[in-house]
Image (cartoon, rainbow, N blue to C red; front, side, top):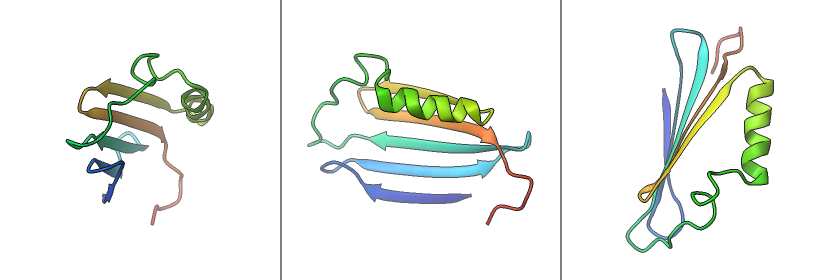
Length: 91
């Protein structure tokens, strides 16, 4: 499993982790945590994340045979993307 922590807006954090699950699906977990001085998110939570970027990402993932689960909450965003893992070994 690989992980990356990087600063986001202000003092928030972004965490990205991935693994190949037992069912041979590549799982990518993206978590954004708002910091104390981060501005309130606008739009995404209000419209259920149905903006054009969200629809594009979800369409591409579905086209690959996968799915996207996104949850908006006051602390930030949690997204899990699952797609079939390639047959070859991942580096």
